[in-house]
Length: 144
Image (cartoon, rainbow, N blue to C red; front, side, top):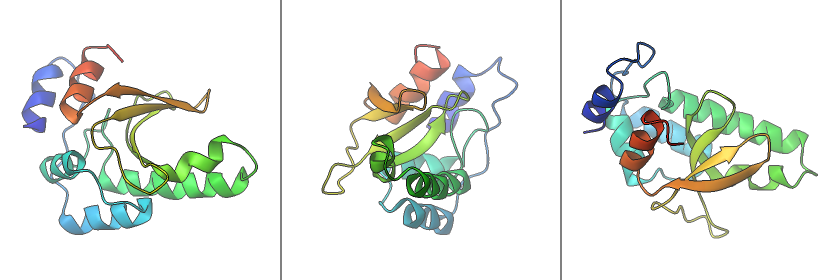
């Protein structure tokens, strides 16, 4: 489903490179690094394709971003923005330093019905989609 959608939306984009599906073991490693189980849509996407080298990150890239977030939290522990970094699952990027993500509440529950953009310059986030399909569609239509 996701692969077909991306291929349809990116017919003229030579930079999008659909990657082979991810293994369950790779997903589990990434989940462990992030500290939360992935939402169903993200797991389904990774089982279908492990990133697209453009918008969507691979499981290894999600894992690496989680490690970077923890390092950033340690370096900037007094800063307000750093206190929330471990409450996000960053799984996509706009290529300009901002990330698309899921957010966990104070009890550690992931809101699976909201995808946010985390804006690195303002250290803020706002909802941009209600589902993975909406995010992919809006992104490749240049709406977000």
